[in-house]
Image (cartoon, rainbow over all chains, first blue to last red; front, side, top):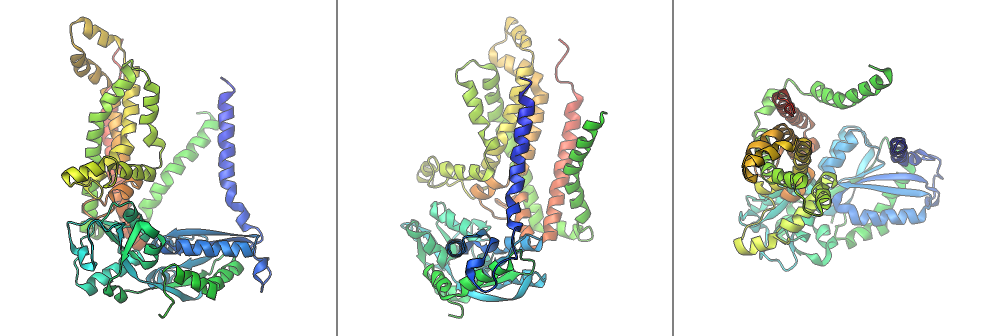
Length: 267
Length: 261
């Protein structure tokens, strides 16, 4: 019995040490990479990206890691407004990809971006309904129907800001039942069949595959979200950050984005 | 006080109190009154207080009998039951929210029947908020009351039985008054936990001002667009929580738990 307490304490101490020690490897060799070729990248690259970029960026990250065996790419996918806030509070990121200009402006106004952001892709809204469209949703006007269970993004999140614009363009007084904190949370509600419809991006409808059906509507063109990307001034791994940006803007990266339902910038 | 205890104790106090001090210091005191007048804050606060109180009442109605079963009955498998009942304590709240969806959502095990028979769905309503809060907070009450029941002297109940009281009367007039401080302490913990619930609420009940946007949700969303408003909301929540905890602890700790044997 007397052996137990010290043993428990020792185990707890060991566990907490391993938890603390996990991130120390990211500081190693951050700046000592070969300048011009991809193959020399090492260390950790931290990318903060809008939730809608989850699938595409994960694939691009895998590609970069395959080309650079010493590099680890880590992602933080969330609503762009949450990410902008985190960067403002000093979160250690190398790259920030936002789902609209507003949230990128939050970061550039605070002087935290390196150079000017570039728009690398665009996205439009699309109505997502569960498989089989159980509530017979036909268009954007259905979002004014209080009898339907509807999900829209919160107004601070880019897809929510775009939603407000399309509602205004369509002359609809929206009657949502929930304001989700990022577009993927809204999509999940549709996938689970818990809402009759949600307003998400075209790329999200595509990523959900068969469990979700998409309904396009003309007013979506009134709120095209431009996605800017920028490296951050305090980036711990600027070479890898630059390489990731180049990959995103390359033909391969652009093809991956359009395959996923995004649009080429300026389209 | 021995020095080896004093230093860690001091660090512990600082660790817990400094963030709260930071909140008070960073508050936009000049804008405080105008921010408080905004309707959204009043809505969120009202909703939080009402739903936490309802969740606590529901927990009392269901939890006290449950605690009695765990402490006093002799049915088999009590330890398994106890483990199951305390799972919400260790389960991440968001997981709890997902689980509630899978059972009570429109496509859920029970929810599907509810929807098809009564055309009623639980998610995205204030009811869902109360359910989510009860799910995460009730175990606190159950554990607290079970502990009090175990510590209470069973001989008083035996005495009541020999005097001719049936089991329900014994429970009502002997057992319950005996463990009332334990029930009160559990209810306070339960209320505080329900007030602060975020993960299960935002997942299961969604987020809509007035219906399901409780204070923690309002703080989370405000943080992304207006950090000053988030600080004001946090201060209000801190103030309400502190006031309640201080008030109740004073009243109930004043009465002693166990009468002289």
